[in-house]
Length: 52
Image (tube, rainbow, N blue to C red):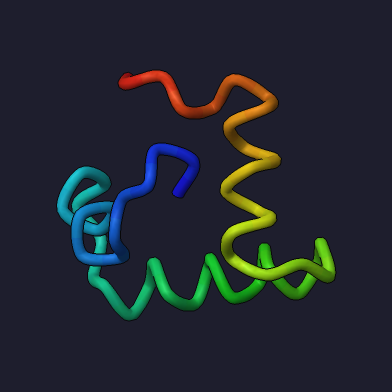
């Protein structure tokens, strides 16, 4: 998410279904009381956008 990937791209990289990725991201957004863009910025600022 911090790298700007779509749910489908994240799912492919992690060998998960797109539905699983959507569910996990929804939980993250809810827990942080933020929107997807804000969560991506937080991840980027924390250094989580490096390819790995």
